[in-house]
Length: 343
Image (cartoon, rainbow, N blue to C red; front, side, top):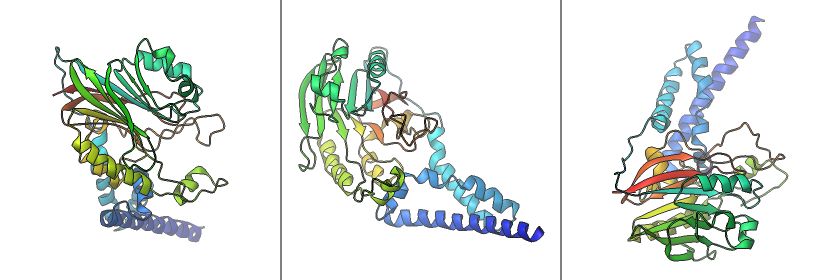
């Protein structure tokens, strides 16, 4: 029995050491290669790679292993990286005589069966502008969300299923579809609204999913995603979008489904150009995807979203007041809400 116990302790100890070495190697490779190679996929879920530390470090401390020092260093790395997400943020205070702009972005999923709940929530959200991706087939066929036209009389829709849709309380001065890469057609939207006499640009963005280079439907979704991961198309879209935003002369808001984790290295390319409202004033990781969309979905109801891929960015002229997530509304995404004031 003692022999079995020693073997078990040895297996746990060396398993923990192997994990620490693998995690340290990953961090080093991330610094060296960014999102290249398979690292792009791993970086998307970087926060999950630290979870085994909860078991590995105590096991090594109990074993009085000198490898515990590496575990402590990695815990400090995790604390410095993810800890600030949960700290209260200093937010801008809107002047009493200054209008604020409240924006929602939501990938509603084109097959959503909770439209009544969705419409009710949007109606009561008090948002000024709503950016929708993956427009529902019903709304695409009708050309608008008629049940919300009294609250949002200005609606700009791509009239195909899974297209984009913008709802606004403020009139459009300009509205157009555009494709930053000139390769896929008209996939994104830009409108200019009259915001109490000032022109404001609003972008509604839905970038390509970084998967399906190899697609084997018989495999579980997570394994298909890992084997078929390819972010080249999405990264190309980001590379073309950034100079468009840099050239924008109006104060602007950019919202949408970017299919990009905020733990990826590519995220920083956008964060260097525009402000991330949730990271600036939101509390928590803000994970928005995936959520179950049907009773037969492989994702259980109790499981929270894993990563954050939905964002509301802003130009320097805006100061975010608050940012939060919306409730479950029948989509595999959660909505994101942010409120701003002009500086």
